[in-house]
Length: 80
Image 1 (spheres, helix red, strand yellow):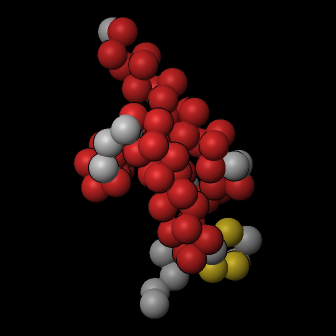
Image 2 (cartoon, rainbow, N blue to C red):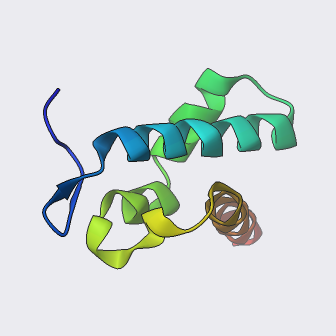
């Protein structure tokens, strides 16, 4: 497997894949929706884009924290 996520010279791709899966599972349970539909929404979010940038260390936060960030982003978007 090709390293997609690198932090300080270390390949964290597997860690990121598990983290994204955990985040989406949290969101699917919270919104009572299926994994695939939540994943597609999450993957197009600003939170997901920030998560992809390993230099900002968002990936090191808990999955619950990142899910909360996404929920905040989504609620702010719906209010505007």
